[in-house]
Image (cartoon, rainbow, N blue to C red; front, side):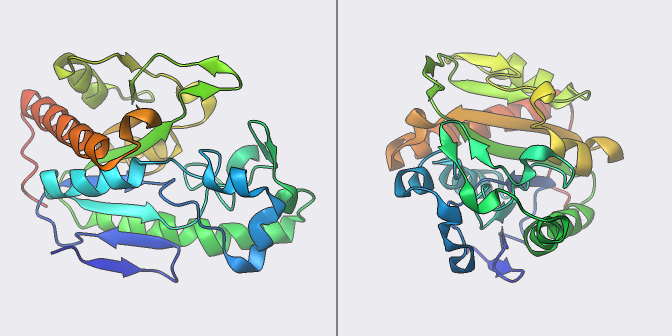
Length: 251
């Protein structure tokens, strides 16, 4: 049974009583923009597109949660409202532009308005994630994302990115067992792009194993693709941890 809890509807926790030490994270799980923000003034096409969320990522993460018997912590608001994979001081934590789309509702915000977004959307997510991690012995943090096949007019051939910051232990292990796909390290993004905040904030500073997985979203655009990808990633993560001698069944 999937158990879900929420902190004022900005963070969702699934399988909170799961036995594994793995903590799955999906920071860009939803395109939802609260009604009070008036869609941030963006066009309907943008609200449905990858600029607002990571299409397919939450569906894959939910199935991974089942395969790995792992808790899943997810943000329930669009990254255009607040990107929970960015610290408050990051310029793109509340983006005024994403790829070809302007975000009028984020332009000209005062420091007080930005702080209100941080308090309303980021802090509950950060604190709940930290709490779920603290409940587990030797936790392993795995974040799940997706990326668009074409960005700013350029095609991306990479299918799956295995991302890490200065701690590459789990990423190295995943790369060793990954097969049958175009899998690349720190692609299509890397730490220089500011995408490893969750890993640094919740894992690296405490010495926890960690990795960020990016999946090209055309591969997980439907149920069949999501199911197949979740099975593949679950196998890689399990094998990688086994090669490191990690027993994850001790949450």
